[in-house]
Image: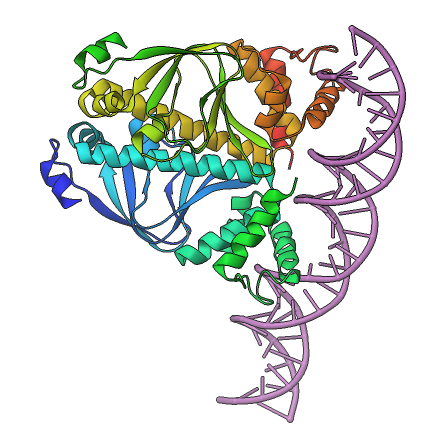
Length: 206
Length: 206
DNA sequence: CGAAACGTTGATCGTCATCAATGACGGTGG
DNA sequence: CCACCGTCATTGATGACGATCAACGTTTCG
């Protein structure tokens, strides 16, 4: 980041901000003046619906960016960004962000690719959450969690799946009874191959 | 578009291609060499799941772009793009597209904004399709259709909602019995105010 | 002082009733 | 033949209620 700061037309500095677990980096509906890049920790990105339910789109970890949508189109924030763990992040002023987009080809390219990746992920997920049962979506989430070696609280996983904790626990139990999860916790009790086999079985069911 | 062609480093031309209703502009899994901008007509953008079900992400109309994700990151196509009506589109070679992204600031900006809009829409939709009943999502789709003054076949609306035509018809009937839709067809039988009131009622329900 | 007893709280789960959405099958009408 | 719908059975997911259990702090009594 330092190189970018130095070459900025504005001279505005990139600061490092820290957030305690449970505090928000960004609040839904806010107008913000910074873009954040996560340096350390995990955050959740979620919409609060009027009926009180939350829907989590994605979890953001090290190296991921947020506030970029609002930085590109000056709109109010679509969603809340809340620290799950203790989080430190680079806070980049909008002025600098915009400047980089226009003047730094490499940065511009990174942003484009980042947006494309987000669209693809969102589409794929919307598709399978719509067409397959919760069990399937939960299994994929657990696989993701294990793969990336992160820990997400149960209530957040439930919100990610769009269900209540009660339903979440029920689904866990169901998976345990099928020997897909280990009997106590929620670790996947299968090899990579076996897991893919199980997922495929869901996909083939009409 | 002509101005862009003229200024291209490559000199590759932008062609206009036509597609009959039902034919595909892009096939899932393909590697493509063009980006398309719809000049006329409507297309659907959908994923074919292994179990045969389709999931439609979005409908693309005049002025909208597709193949851009694959143009930015050289990956296989995420989804199918199929002409619903007769469609004409500008076919832009990847080489030109990439060139424009790098050399034409305005074009670059348009692409960024386009991607941001897509992400926002996708997120919002994923959220309400996850948290609210089908009836609500259907109503919003019908409102969109009326607003944009386009006609989408029933089966495509069903795929958009992730349900079967049978269920789609059932839901229509349900809305008719509540005097929200006109008794025969599927037009919304309410003023804008009333519609918003109905939608809000869904949103307030726990 | 320290250990046993108590109450509080939050997380989990069994159970039962309910709702939303589906699938299947057959009938009707253009 | 195809689009649509009535009907009935079924599945998937939820909500509500109550029981259990572990964690923690506080009280009580020897």
